[in-house]
Picture 1 (cartoon, rainbow, N blue to C red):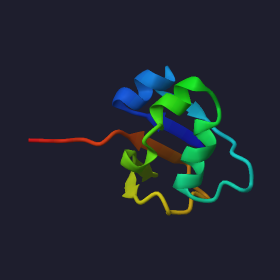
Picture 2: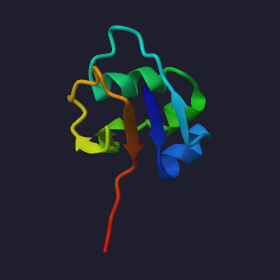
Picture 3: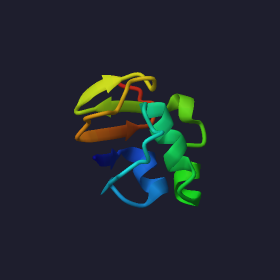
Picture 4: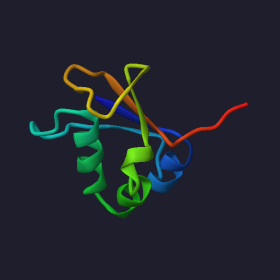
Length: 83
């Protein structure tokens, strides 16, 4: 699956996107965030307050308990404000 990072998540990780192959125990978007956090300092910094991270699976916003099986793209966003 492709992971896409936006705004300061992208800046902290240091790349806009990457292909991921998470292990079998990673079932939900929240599991994926936890797995990513363990991948290194940039990821840990990007996802340090993981409850605030917004997730979209195949361009549909979901909660972190959403299952990722079959996802082609998972996007991660920081909290946003708008006007």
